[in-house]
Length: 263
Image (tube, rainbow, N blue to C red; front, top):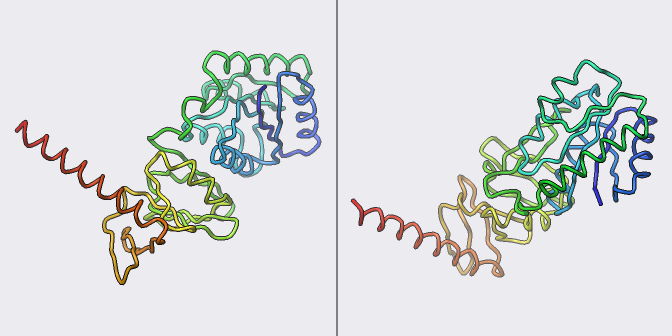
């Protein structure tokens, strides 16, 4: 069964699209969003929580982030969903297909035409598998997280994140450029990013192990140095952090030794 996201800034149009999609027996779940920024947040949440999203059915002309820009941003995700445009405008079809859209539907949407678009999505998923099926860690290379900044949506690269702090129902992503508040649980993000070298050092802190430059002990208390920040390590996580850094040191030493042997 397909899991899809419907996006339209006009509520009646969104309600109709959601209704038509739910009528198709090939679709198991439909989520609705009233703008592209909300859709990006929904997509990010789904990825972090390990949910599958097969396709996005979206309008093009929307205030703020439009459908074409949304689709361009999808390229930043390791496993983007398939895209089907549903719009009243026929002048963007070429651009839409250049961006890799599976289909381009004109409003008012005829049920049989929508059924054909769903068939194309189902066929694409059957050929390649659902997006992300072979990449549970969103790929070891990178992942993009959408954040809101003054009414704009920006994608923050996981590679730039040095550490993450829980703040209530939110997490703050720390990078060299500053901090970004994102609504998601730290536990879900920990599970999502553990395969990319992130490690829990405290019940409220997740760090990128590659950015740890020093492990300190003072009066039985441990802390890690990341950039200018000294972050406390809880007693529960001290051994895990120490063992990780020891393994990393030995791996680096072995690599240096191998290089010297071939010189």
